[in-house]
Length: 289
Ligand SMILES: [Mg+2]
Image (cartoon, rainbow, N blue to C red; front, side):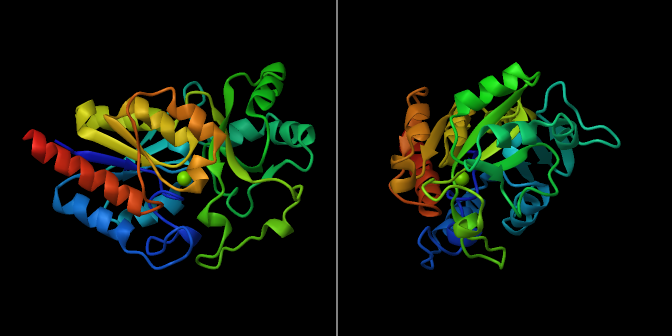
């Protein structure tokens, strides 16, 4: 019996401009809202797990009737108002967040020097963070990891969070144009998080599931990035958002071959979440569970 849905926000539940009421192209769509309605009516918990910082997950989560959420790629998890950290040896201290501790090592400069024109901070969303340093660009993650390893930061991981979706376009006034960025013009820009190696969406999902006491097979996750696909290890079934941006994402296509419980949704943002929830509920009814 389906009891919980873990859902990525940008490019998965919300569409263009981070809007719950628009699809990827900016057309009005109620599918995301209908997905939430279907879950709430069936008594299924919905847990947003996003790369966004705490306040920009907490407020939409509250508006969507959720009592738990993961922020900064699952490094932080809040359940009924209580914080849980997936940051391993690096823990928040009174005067220094995990983010502060990472930045004080000089790793931002290290990476940006190594990839001129290919990596920069993801302004204006790079501020107010507690765990991960948020970049945008297009780099070889293996090369970046080697650089970190060689410079005393083997305990950090550069996480690929997929192509930049709605946050880069439109929305509630927080607009930013690629032409204003300092990146080379030919890049298809992705989001990257630099975080402690233990940080992952999968770790946050596993912890929430344990705390709530949900069985693996009673949970699903929906997402659109390579990092999201990792949630497959912590749930019964992972649903990949449909559309060109996932079909054409090499990192996503590689990641799905590491799991046997990945299903491909037909729909894009919003619609895919509805499809995942309703299909799972119907399968459960047919099986009589
Ligand atoms: Mg996403």
